[in-house]
Amino acid sequence: MTFARINNVELNSEAEADTFISNFTSGKFREIFPEAEILISIRTGPSSVTSVSVYKNKRTADSVAERRNSTIEGLKSLIKSLALTEGKVEILDLKKDSGVGTFWSSLFKISNKDYV
Image (cartoon, rainbow, N blue to C red; front, top):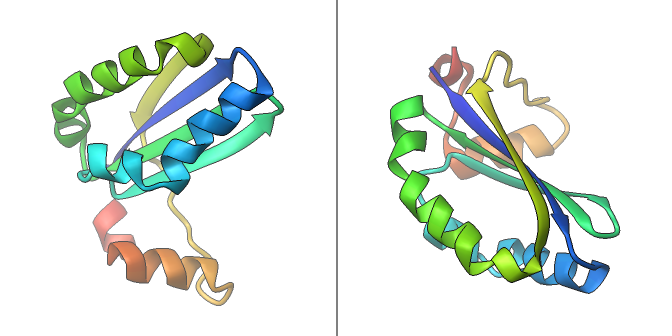
């Protein structure tokens, strides 16, 4: 069962949101969470970010909980509020001819059978 964690984060300012996002662009989160099949960060407003991490199963997602908590603790001074949701991935549909699906499929070596 593929499992996802979604973090909705409101940062204290736009500048602090930039700092938070820079952790994704620098590859820092990939280093912290190498078990994640997919890491996505979405700027949802000037000072808000939604991040999504997808794992092969809940056991794998749970195995990184301590690192996640430590990471959040380290960024606590930037964070105004944080809401975590999680659950089973019901659909993972990557458009094959868009280039994005090809990119993700090749990067993570995924196929539909891995996520059903």
